[in-house]
Length: 341
Ligand SMILES: [Zn+2]
Image 1 (tube, rainbow, N blue to C red):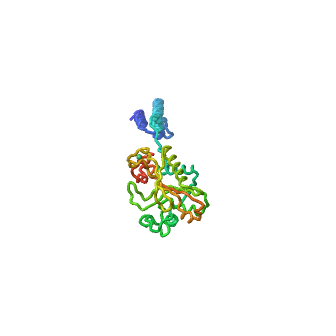
Image 2 (cartoon, rainbow, N blue to C red; image 1 turned 180 degrees about the vertical axis):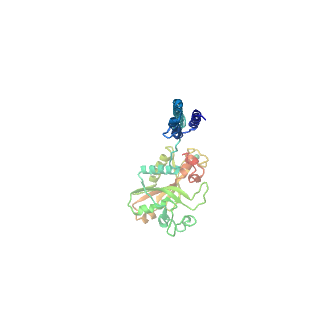
Image 3 (cartoon, helix red, strand yellow; image 1 turned 90 degrees about the vertical axis):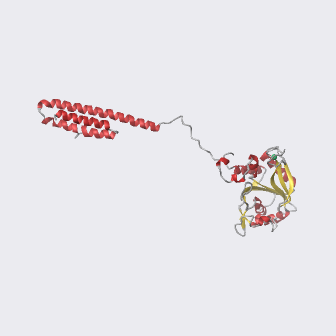
């Protein structure tokens, strides 16, 4: 093989490697292999001295031509690769401005919490002080102090969740009354809200856990008229200005006289419908004048002071206002239900 044939083999191999390069690092390696200080073409130039004098010029020219050709091919391939790399980089960083935005869901209060807050705000507006009462309550406060007879069915262990002989989960928010009364002097206008517990088989209208609000007022000269005025004001603010309030006699151990309070049906406006069973009225609360035994038991002179008390369940209100037929929906945390409010 002549010197020139040898050069052609080297050239073709070098150009093939340039074409096969897939990165700048590959090209750097090819450049070093052929054009570096100890590169193959550089070494070819060094052998010029050993050639016949008449061939030296042509051989040197040929090596230099190949060196230039290879250097150009390397640069051309390098700019191809860089363009490709930046295209990939651009594609990676591209922003599609036509994509729809991401939807972030915001949380909200549970419908029962919202109802509780609305009820609280109405009573705060009427001058009531909100009182935080314990859910684990003493038996004495839950029953005895509220004038319950010893044989009342609610006292039965089958009806209430007892923690031990002395404590139970409160069966009604009314349990806080004696706590507040015994430590204070009238006048008092106090209100509490929260969870209550009773042993009950769970179905569409019964649960073991439910929410109540309980309020009472004690002062000189308080009468049933004050109670009725307060209930009416609450009903107007809760259900709208057209509602009316109806009182009927009822019995609770802690009031005398006692009353069942009903409001105009919020669905039919009083004309009669399925929800109010054709009566035009919806039962709302239990109420009455605080029993003198309870006042005396808390050290309040029942000859000087009188008071009224009332309490009601919270679940019933959204059930009536939104036509919700099943109490269990409030506790099941099904977002399809909760998102509707
Ligand atoms: Zn009705």
